[in-house]
Length: 139
Image (cartoon, rainbow, N blue to C red):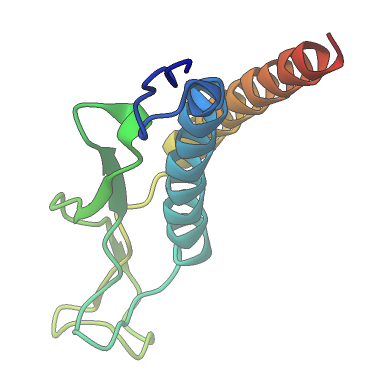
């Protein structure tokens, strides 16, 4: 009687082929969170009052040490916002100055372009891996 070869139950050899798909999908997820944070900053670039009090403060998304892991955290940029003299503004202080958010549209635009390009690179990797898997199935 022939013996059945023992194969490990996990990870299956076929599952290993999906590694590049998983890695690029995690990268796309990470970049998506970066894009959402940047969009939130742009949307609140002129918000002078938030429920917590004061002006909106820019948020920065940070990836873990392994960007492919998909773990991101968001931290608040502690730099003060710009002060504009406008005594008629409802959020003006006693001296007539209004604190605006510390969001610099130039920085946000560059960050947006970078995050978009990295997202597009992950999409390209995903498409290439998918194409290779399709060809392997056809063999």
